[in-house]
Image (cartoon, rainbow, N blue to C red):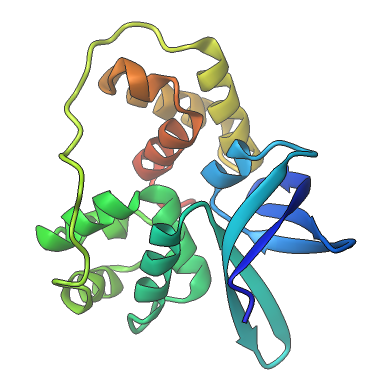
Length: 202
C-alpha cells in the first residue's frame, strides 16, 4: 500500500498532479483546490489511497490525513466510488461534510456530480456518528473586494475543468460577496465554494 508520496511537483493541472519519487513520476488524482495549491518544482507531501482494480491502479491524493480518512469513509458507502468521493471533497471540506451528516442534510451531497438523491441520503445515514465537526459554521462577511489574483486563479481553474467562463465567473463573484476577508484570499476555499455553487457539471 502506498500511504503517501513526497517529492518535487513535476506538473499540476486540473485534478491530476505528477510527483517525482525516486526518479519516477507518480500520477496522483487530487481535488482542483489541492492541485492549485502545489507549485512546480517544490517538494510536496501528498497522503494517498491506492485503488486497485482488475485493469487499473490509481492513486488518489490529499493534503491532510483528515481528508484521506473522510475519503475512505465515503468509499465505504454503497454507490460511492473513488472519483465520486473525491468530488465530494472538492465541493465540501471535511468539516462541512461532518456538519451536513450531523444535520442529515443530504442536499449538500446532491450538488456533487455523480451523487444522486438516493446515494446522497445513504451517505448521511451510513456515516451518521462517524464524523464530528471541529470548526463553527462560517458566517457571512463583509463585501469588500477580494484580491484580483484569487478570482482570476479560481476562474482559470473552473474554465480548465470545463465550465463555461460566464457561469464560472458568476459563481466566483457570488462566492466572493458572501465570504469574509480571510476566505477571499484563499484560492482553494473559494474554488471549493464555487464548485459547490455550480453543482454537478452537465
